[in-house]
Image (tube, rainbow, N blue to C red; front, top):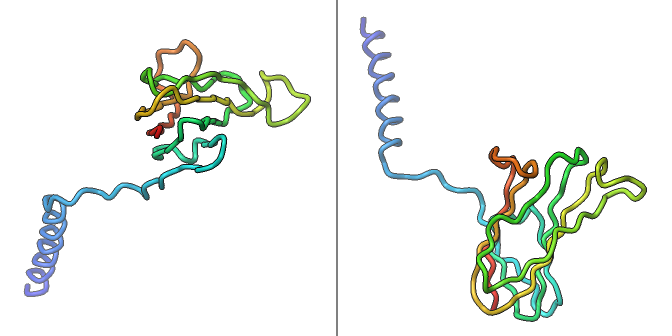
Length: 149
């Protein structure tokens, strides 16, 4: 009988610890923050989907190059869906195949976007990977917070 009471007390103690942890106000810690990405003294700065979420710092004379990997299936593409006007001017995308001698329909590669600063300020960029003209949610996205000094 004492063993049963001891086991019950143990279960209640574990449950109490778990519930206390749930209401303690501690939030899950986000993954490691991306470091500030900048290339002082360089003409351009290149980022990929690996740096998603990064803070990017550019000078007025620097170009931002965004290179986003695409599959060889040809059914999805990257689109720039969030770029407030005034800070950066975008050109692209331009598709670059990974393998020479293949067509853009059957080769994996990269969509390349070039951004030139228009003025000093801050802007958020968001790219989505989806089927063209689809209303379905994007299968992937990347974001960058860009500051032009």
